[in-house]
Length: 369
Image (cartoon, rainbow, N blue to C red):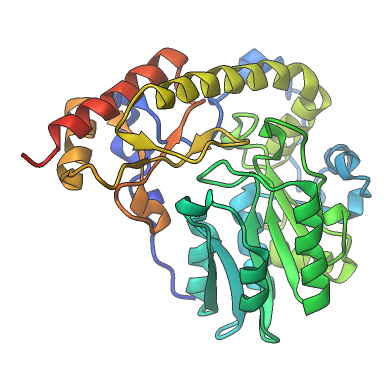
C-alpha cells in the first residue's frame, strides 16, 4: 500500500498546539470527557489479552441497538481502524469502489492507497448535499466491490430518511454489491435515528465508535456490525493480524459508559442542540457565509459566498494567527478553499460564538480592495 499523510491529520489542532488556539472550531466530536467525571472504576481490571472479537458484554450492549447478536459485532481500535479493516478486506489494486464526496478523508485515502479505482458520488452544495439515487445507480458496475456512505454526514451534517436508506440497500442487493455505512454520528441525529443499517440486510456493513457522540476519542473504541458471517470472519482475521485484540482498559471504560448511556448522553445531546441553535441563529443574521443546515452530528460545512471577493490564503492566515481561531479547511475534504468545516460542540458555547464572529472579521479583512 502507498501510504500518504492526509491534510486533515497533518494540520490537526493537536499538532499546531491547543495552547496556540483560542477558539477551536475544527473538532468533529463532542467535548472530550474526563474519566473522573464519569465515575468509572477500573482498579480491579486484569490487564490480560482480551477476547479477540472484543469484550462480550460490551458487544452485547452494542448489539441490542439493532437486534443483533454479540457475534455480529466486532470491536476495533476506533472507527478509523474499522474503516481500514473493511477497505483492506474488500479491495485490492484496481478493484472498483464508489465513495460519496465530500467525505471524511479516510474513506477516500485508504482505497486510494490500496490502488483501487474510485468513482465519486458528488454531493453538491447546490443540491443541498442530497444523494442522487439515479446517479449512484449509474456509478455501480459489475466490478464495484463496495459503496461507501456516511450518515449523518461528515462534514455537512445532512441526513437521509429511512425510506431512502432502504432504497439504497435495495439497489445494493439488485446490483450485487455491498454498502459500507459509517454511522458514527447516528446518536446525534436531531430527529428520529435511522435504524442500524446492517440490521436491514446482510449486504450492509455498519461502522460506529465512541469518539464523536460521546466525547471519548481517547479510548479508541469503534465497531463493525454485520449479519454476514463470512465478512465477520474475514474482519476478525484482519483485526488479529493488525492488533490481535483491543485494549481491555479501553473496552472496560466503553462498557461502563454504555451501561449508563442515557444518563451520560442526555446532557451531551442538550449541549449539542443548544450550540446548534447558536450557530443557526448566527447563520441567519450574517451575509458572508451560506450553508446547508445540518440534520444531525456536531459539524457543518458552510462556505464563503461565491460573490464575495476574498483572498483565501490571507483569510486563513488572519483567522488563525490574528484571531487564534481554528477551523477545518476545505482542502481537508478535497473541496474548494471557500468551504470550512465548523465543529460546534467541542469548545464552549461562548468560544463558539466568539469564533464564528472571528470568521466574519477575517473575511472582511481578507477582501480584495
